[in-house]
Length: 393
Ligand code: SF4
Image (cartoon, rainbow, N blue to C red; front, side):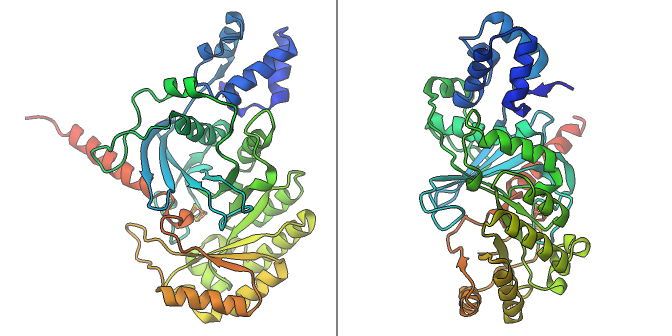
């Protein structure tokens, strides 16, 4: 299978160029075209000799994501729906300056990226798992989400609204981006909590993150990259042994096995005792604060009986708790608790000396809302296919 150039680390590309008897600076030039200028065609790499461009074309692909739909929330959050080369749909979410979210107060632009098409883990509250698992994303498909958003940003124009309520992409999205390309990066904070269980696609994810972290690639500091998992304990230990200092977030959503078992099937495989030991191992190896994500769902996990075990876990792991009021998912019956219940839950946690935040903004419910745009679009496309299949009389 032909690999995409955005799945290669710099030393792999350099070795390839040596095999082709090309000087080392040519690999640097190629990397600059891909990651600095974010070009989408070999012919745009104008300072590379044609013979070298032809070699690259023959041995690698240079695929880009096709923007299908774009949605802006009131608070500035922008959701992108992309089409991959096999027609699958994935989402990324751009969150402009938001000091209360991940990373430090100076963070400017956070991108939440997907790692799989669909998800096999079937958390009961999540839209991404509703349609089942299709496949892992390749490293280039993870990397390209960052580049595609930066390319879109460089266009600095928002296309006109589409008939379906979304925003149609520009007819030729690549060309204006090339003109406006600049070495300045837009994305400086990454959260790996879009569609899919990131640690179930471990190899591809880590390759992508090495590329996005490298100075020759995305240039995003490892400490500005947060990997979120539903609780794959063995992979958390593996990540702890990786030299890169990524941040870790656990999608906890329940402080007892009883509660977690009800909404997260993964807990039957890796119950809280095992997950806690893996987190402790991570914490000791990295000496980094872990975040516990907790989506508040009315009548499911918002009772005060969750407070003591949640506080005990947070204090044991030296973890921060991020409370997220549930965002409704079409086709699911769960609802978010009232604001007074949310505030009461936060206050009770703080009484237990837990560092906790409650996301109050609209449109920031990335974890719960992720996957909805894709599901809606797939329904529309399936209906269109059915109509097209009906023979004309
Ligand atoms: S919450 Fe994460 S792990 Fe669970 S089904 Fe959704 S995408 Fe998969």
